[in-house]
Length: 83
Image (cartoon, rainbow, N blue to C red; front, side):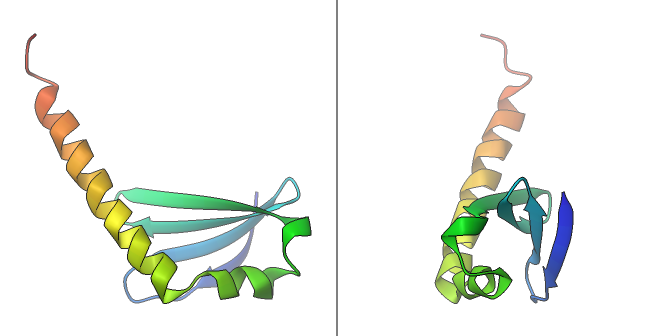
């Protein structure tokens, strides 16, 4: 997997990779990450991929990060509970 772009952002670590004829967009926040795979033939290049990373996409990603954290905390709290 080859890193093709680091996209600066004040909240997230956003990176775009190229692997197996796909662009992979990775958005990280703390210990959690979300990835999106886009076929190279579905876009007109890296600039197209960058245009897809909109404020709306990142706002929705934040909602999913919050859900992920909540679910992880619930799972973590249940690890010591005996059935």
